[in-house]
Length: 171
Image (spheres, rainbow, N blue to C red):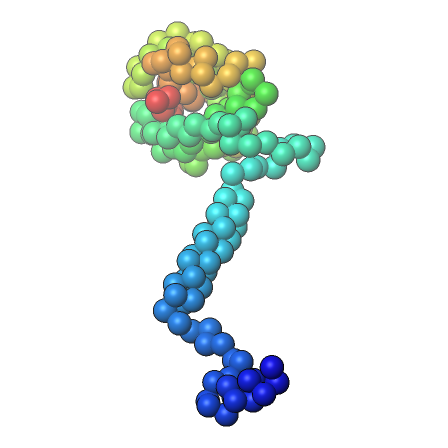
């Protein structure tokens, strides 16, 4: 057997294998694409979880968010957003306004109907002060969507409750 190996090597045949045949290159490409796809999937999908208060992790299915653009009403110069975020069956309404007056309490509500002339108050919200407000409602987003049309409305002040300064429709 040693004689056969010597003859094979003398004839130019060696034990080295060619790793770059067309078949092997195809296998390398397929494996590379699979590895790249797995890396992409696991790295790029890290945004599917969000950190909740107190260190609990929630998936997108458990946390839903709706953002409402609040437009200027009655030339107030106030505009911004209302973010409605659901967690554990409750909805947190966070209002952020630019152009709001300093140290003035501005009543805010979710009204029936649509802007610019919404109807009755359905959900009272915490007054906006210095452009910010946060309220937790004991209702989920699905229930709110079932009550559409609804609008988030901010009033000028308690004495001037009939003057709207910012309004946005929930869609």
